[in-house]
Image 1 (cartoon, rainbow, N blue to C red):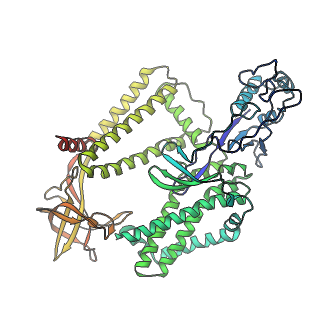
Image 2: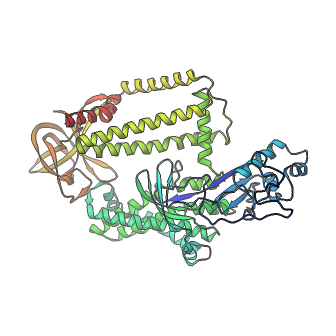
Length: 590
């Protein structure tokens, strides 16, 4: 008999933040009934006691709903609205649960099942029913949920609307947003956007590779937020159109990035995987349609308006495509899980991957996988990808904090120590859960892996770079580099690459060689950021540039990347993470 739980599926705009697992809800508490024969509400007769926590007279809660299996499937879905939880049961377990009417004690239940059913499976199923609170007397009143909820590993959610009435089945908004006319319009909008990109690619590319006025970025951010709101409403509208209802809609911080979310746990009520996939992808489809309309507008306009619409189209399309990543709880993962029809797919695949690691690294027991072999590889990507995001956050934090001198360096070193400590804590937990029979094997394996990484980092050369800006005036090219802690000066006579840069990347437009230093001075801040018109100045070191080769039509200002010495990858990481921050801290305090 197979029992698995799925609940709290939330899809987010730039992050789908819903955990697929067990969660308690804030629904009203209903009282369980008392069966005939004088059995109390806790399911225990006056002369009896629960066996291992299972009521002696087990009775199914009257508010539990059975949803029949999808065509071609054998698993039933049990809806527990009180806890906002859905449980998958095999056919035998569903029949056992449905037959618990409170008129038979445990001995009679076992007897009625007959000798052909393994009693260990029956006992395990009854204990699971009790653990999930599906029986009268085993459920506890749900704890009222706070509007704030932390979803590991790095999502902080704030519920704005709980079970919004305007997204209930049959309401006007789901009928307006989720129909074939709207679906056809979205498809046409995406096609129009593709045609517009082919016709007006230059204006859209300018948004990616060229600096733009900072006011344009504020407008584009407002447009993206508005489209994201429609994205979340689309999830809820399509779910309601198919007969479900979203639980929560709100805002969140997902790996420190602002985003929105819509809890679509009710998608497990839907009877076909096609409907569940459409619910998961409804938001992305809306985003791509909006990006298509904006791109078409950019192609039809000219001047600053075309640039602005191109920027909005680019940012909207980027956030939509980002949501298709399946390795964290984004819309793409929810769609994948719905299509393969495996609840808790990410958790199960990561558990299989951990089991393989525990077996190979720590000498734990041979893994008993819950999914086919290929999903363990998917679980490895799911385990690693959040740490890629954390690494990117650390890189951003380093650049931001080091600009604040000693206090910034202290904050960075504290953040680094906390991150390393957390990684060691997770490794220790994994080791304890591995059931390793040979602790020395795990320590030796980890030490060997660490030594190999250190040797690899020490053997690979790395060219340090100094990032600054170039300007052209009167036939001369001048480069400037920030004069700040942790910023390396360029090497005299080293090569310099001149580029034109925007928010998404850079293009090379020329090259040169670092000449004589022209001294320290002030330079406009907007030379060093991909925004035009940003007020403020920056302390810089200025250098003349020799042997300059600029392409025809190269802009008069842009990004300069100069050689700043050579080291190894290990030395580079050590300088950025420890050496420079420690020196900055020491200079500031002493």
